[in-house]
Amino acid sequence: MTDDYAARLFEAKNASLLQRLFRAARLLNEHALRSAPAWPGGRPRPAHMSLFPHIALEGTRPSELAEKLGVTRQAVAQLVGDLEAAGVVERRADPADGRAKLVAFTEAGRRGMLDGLEHLRRVEEELAAELGEAIVEALRELAGPLEGAAERLAAASAAHEASDAAARSQGT
Image (cartoon, rainbow, N blue to C red; front, side):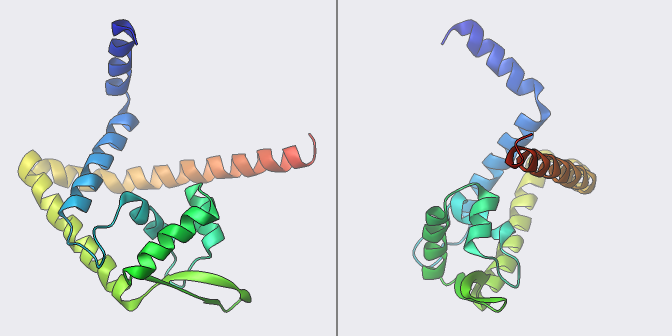
């Protein structure tokens, strides 16, 4: 790698708002996981945490989790197995299809979600000590519009992707 490329890459990363937000989110996630209380069997990994936003309260099929995460069903099965061993989730029969299974939070998992959110609140307090309360409050205020815009962009790109897939399947 040339020094010129390294400098251009550094400059491009610093000029990208999303790159900087992704990096900050990754670093804060790593800190939150390292500072979280351990589960039975050890600490949760980022891969475990990536499942949580996709598990509906009534449960979600493993195949849907795999699709949402962009990983194989086998990878999801391993993560779900780890979370089952920790008592966080369980596999249960899908009432809509007796042959299918749902991954759902156990009662301990539901309590753990609330405990985890309280832990994140403590991490936010640490962040406020670093940045100042005014900056963290401004971030809270911006989070709603940012999340809304991100949801709209994600929905639009998903619709575009589905349209492209339909066109490919029709040979157009």
